[in-house]
Amino acid sequence: MRLGMGEIVVILVLALLFFGPSKLPQLGASLGQALKSFKKGLNSLHEDEEAPPPVREEQTRLPAEPSANASTTAAEPKPTAAVAGQRPS
Image (cartoon, rainbow, N blue to C red; front, side, top):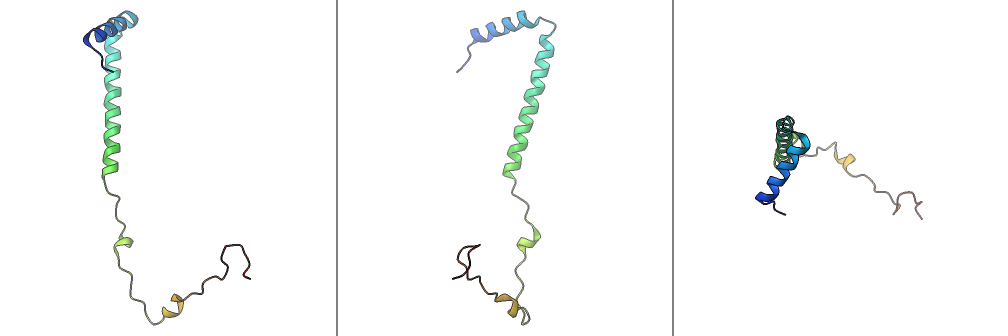
């Protein structure tokens, strides 16, 4: 839907009649501020989406080599029940 020049003139004349000549500059200023803050909010959302999440230091470290003492803790027995809450048969 596009507004032509005639439609814009009719809207401006109706706004002038409805609000009066003293209120139109105030309305225009408040509308401009609202649009500016809306665009600023949209730009900040786009910047947040484009920025990659920060990489945590723990994720970049390689796991340490297992020592001889850690070999006993590495092999843990698995539960025998197929579904949690059931008793093994």
